[in-house]
Length: 544
Image (cartoon, rainbow, N blue to C red; front, side):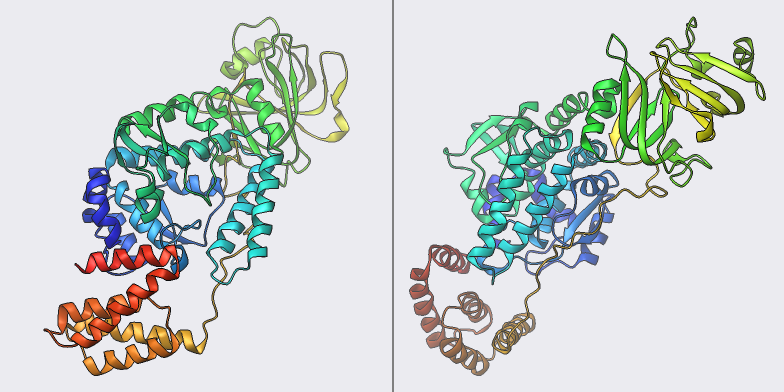
């Protein structure tokens, strides 16, 4: 964080540094979730702890409700420059500060609202599971080369299968190129605001290089896939936060939840997941759709589900129309009655009576499409003066070719009312009563079981921390720690740096021999690897 803030003072959007101050996130200690929740509460957000990556639909729903999901893990020291897995640094140093900007907060919430409705496929979820496991195994310090290669191959195979990205997959790309890796300004003069850049020492510097292509942000960003395990070959530059919202709205105008119609229904059928179709009357039908009949103009005139189905209005399940009642599916016509210019949902009781549709009597409805519904009308359901459903007993329904698609012995026929399908989206309307969230992943973060030697090292870190907090250094204890480092931890670089910093700030000139010995050891450790050279050199620079 000290490295990042020093760098980001020059290269991050001004909202980031302002947000750090507003959210009160410390750069001296690993944040605590309760503290973050309190700070975020002051800007209208909250925080909740999760284990690594969460399913995209759930992630979006959290954002819609202004909840920041936080993985409370800390990246391992081998991934200090860039981690493929979400961790507390990514959330605290990346996401939280920039949310303090009201326009960006609006963008993030709006993104969540639209993302929660995006139609996703089974392949999307398989890819999510593969990404989740790969990020876990790459973050696990004791992972073998074979484990990593197997996880990488599994992800590659699942991506290869998904030849037609879903609505949700395309939207996730926009999320990646904005929320995670976005730039603001122009391709030649920009500032960083994406959380992946703000929380990654390595990538925030790498992105400045001309080799990383800078592209003006547009809807076209959804055509660029990404790899979470590698630094990005291109980034997208938005003019400002208003530009982000404009592009998001442009993409949202192409989404099924706004378009409705036959093409949208086809997408939710192809998804093989629970989806919701909303009639123009406001009636919501949630289930796995498998039936779509269209007329010569391509407009839907009959739709249906298989298996558990829910009927709802304004995201609240209609009494008596839950998945237990509609356990075997639901189907119904869409459209106007033949010879009528008035949508059926606007019919009054008088209109129904004039058409020969009255309670307790045999009624016959013929739709413009040719679908016929004939049965005894048992009940009429209205909401807000809008006709939503007609329920029939002893009912027969035939399609345009005269084929029977509902028989009297199947029970009551609940006919949805609506001239058209105005919205289609993934998931159920009333999630409280129809839970369609995927089961908890069995791929969980691998927790280290620390050895006695590692626990002894942690104790020494704690001793140094206590001295820093007290403002006093104990040279005798520090010399003892140094001896242990030389004997048992010859490759440890961080504790050596911390001891030097402690001596610089509290020893009042004492411990010069110890300081000199530590510097010599650190300079030798630089040759151990490129990562060691990077972090040690940066640490020495921070010491001044």
